[in-house]
Amino acid sequence: MKQTDLFQNKQVVVLGLAKSGYAAAKTLLRLGASVTVNDRMPLDHSKEAQELEALGAEVYGGGHPDDIITDATDLMIKNPGIPYTNPLVQKAIAYGIPIWTEVELAYRLSESPFVGITGSNGKTTTTMLTGEMLKGSQKTPIVAGNIGTALCEVVQEAGENDIIVSELSSFQLLGTERFHPKVAAFLNIFEAHLDYHGTLEAYGEAKARITMNQTADDYLVYNADDERVIHFIRSTKAKKVPFSIKEKVDGAYLLGDTLFYKDEPILKREELAMPPVLHNVANALAALAVAKTLGVVTPFIQNVLRTFTGVRHRLQFIETIAGRKFYNDSKATNILATTKALEAFKEPVILLAGGLDRGNSFDALVPYLRRVKALIAFGETKEKIAMAAKEAGVKTIRFVNNVTEAVPCAFELSDPGDIILLSPACASWDQYRSFEERGDMFIKSVHTLK
Image 1 (tube, rainbow, N blue to C red):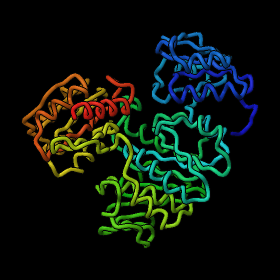
Image 2: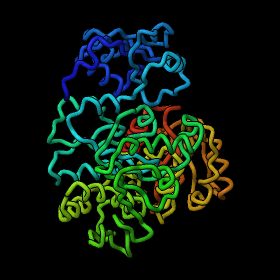
Image 3: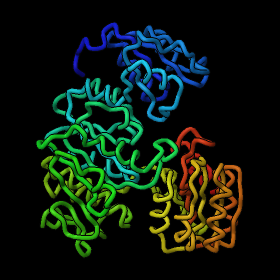
Image 4: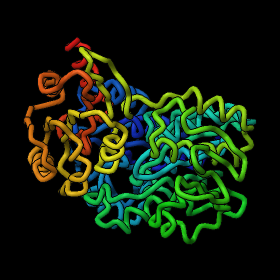
């Protein structure tokens, strides 16, 4: 980490004590800042809050006191999920206080170059796959960001011989100013998080900030099949490297049953260790395009593609019980992700779905629900998803309280040869702290059933 006096004696408010807030606050204290931490949840029993207090931070939980922000505040580090309509954020805006997410802070302190990966779907798989491939590069990859490890945590130890491979959400990117990845990847854009961003245009522009500061010396890997992506990267200065599952491009592409990079055959589709469905092929193409721009040789890339089986909570195979196969796709937090999951199976599917209500309908899910044998719905959106299932002709629909109840219910409705799939099409925050917690509860329930 760069040693700097940039934050010495600066008044910094860290809004939201999650992983990123904790890492940012601890880093700022180390750099001599005067740090105030605030979270809407009570922090009386938080070990992280107690540690930060011991290091000299002022910590306030259980609400947002108005006087935390003053005209003497120099900087706000905001949890990505906190909307800009929050009263403290609005007050900071009124005072002209810079509002960053932890990504910006980590970038300014990092001695390592960045790879940044964003998109509505496929970010985690592509980030993990890229991290594995870059083990064959001249630098040591460190995977962090929206994937679960705070960037401020890893930049403290990362040096010039490392490269940080970061999964980045639109929420995170919206709070950046100078963030400048050496290689960026923009995978796709789909109508999601409109409750936060307001419009698809605003959402896409937030995603496009990943390439905002790139120059002609940098690379932008992008989805040539997605017209929206092409629209949002129109002003990039980076060298464009396209990937496509539909046509030959001057980058990475699928031709027949083979993955190519610039006329070089890389791998047969059936050789992928991941399920070789098209969205996984697209993720693989994006990752190999990033790896190629950074000098990774083909044999190393081939080995990774033949051995990388996927990530936890993303179409993760759990168990076969009495002829039924259970899959955990808890990371499917929007409709597109669930449609991709349903496309992956030819067998009858018992679908477990539902979660946070963001105000959208599920009409786009209807064509894919026609292949569903039964729906088990839970959470705030259960009635909406049930309406879509009825329109699709799904004859068996059940309501349950949570994922734990959904598993035995699904088993009772299933037959040998069926797929029991958790793919919620919704965020988890109405009932669970994260999609990981929701997925873990599913896995636990499957093991209990066995």
